[in-house]
Amino acid sequence: MSKASIYDRLQRRPPAPVETPKVSTERSDFRRDRLRVIDGVALTPAGLVNAREIPPQAAPEVSPTLEGAGGSRLLIHPIVEGVGQQAPDPMDPEAKAQRVHQLIEAVALEAMMMLDNAEPRPAEVGFDIVLSAPLRSATAWNTIIEPLRKMIQASPYGQGLGSLRHTENGWDMHRHLSVPDTGGRPYVVWISADSLINRADVGRLQQHALLAGPSTPNGMKVGEACAALLLQRVAEDTPNPATGWWLDEASVKSHPKRDDLHQRTRHANLVELLASALADTTPDVLISDSLRRPGRATEVSRALLERGVSLDIIDDGISVEEWCGWPGEALTALQLVLAVASLAKMPEQDALMLNVAEEERSRAMVLHSTSGTDSSSQEAAVAASADTRIGS
Image (cartoon, rainbow, N blue to C red; front, top):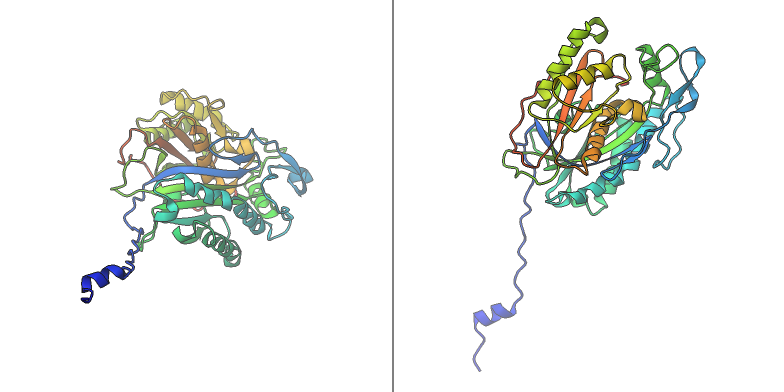
């Protein structure tokens, strides 16, 4: 009987395992002027906001501890549902950090579940996480970040987790969500949280005469919010998606204090801002920051009409401060979640996000449907980012 040939022996031997090389999905060539918005969720005093529903406007309640001018109890907008832990004492110096921790913890699971709503799967190609909250203490941040990192790494999404970093504010999201020179993952989960229901933030608003009270009926009622968004970073070779919305850089206009300007000048400034932001777009939804400030509602209505936009600022929009109280640094992310929720049943339409509450700066951003669009960027007039914000 002849010996088996080498070919016979090779066939009987199990083939050696072939290791598939791990392909890095990190890139450093993502555009800094455009993001694709895929989904969003927010925990607010009005309730949970997602693509299926926007709760009715929240009613303020009387704070048991916080006082305004003259010793009167403040009207506040706290989050009641969705946060399991008891809210910290607003008089405690550490109240803000404790509350932000609670809010991020409460929305983290909802944020991770959004990763199932995109193709290719973010868990497979990779995602980064950016947390935004006005916390300046490294200890406070470590208390939030490390438990969150461990939770994600132990989940089915853990393999896709790239960087997990934080920033103190959430105003200029394109800058904060851009990748460093070393690169980043194609997707990014942005979680932005803030709470102004504490003595320190109330004091700052009082100092600038922005807090609602007997002498400032058009002032703000403090609130809190935590919003999470799933976004895709866009490169020049990114295929045009069938779903979602493009978000280009904001148009920002700096100007003297509104009270120091003639009505005609204020109107001209706002018309110029809208012309820069809207270009050929006619939005169907308006998400503003606050129209209760003196003259804002009239100015916005007139400027929209001049631009040929027949939006009813009440029936076709939401004013965040009236709807759930002032959310501080969570404002931009919350506006985006409200815009996504408003467009969920009409994905081919666009939304305008407008910021006119500040005295010396106005901003406009447009959420464009990706349907039938290309990936070219619209021109945007972008002013230098300032550090001063209402309530932060």
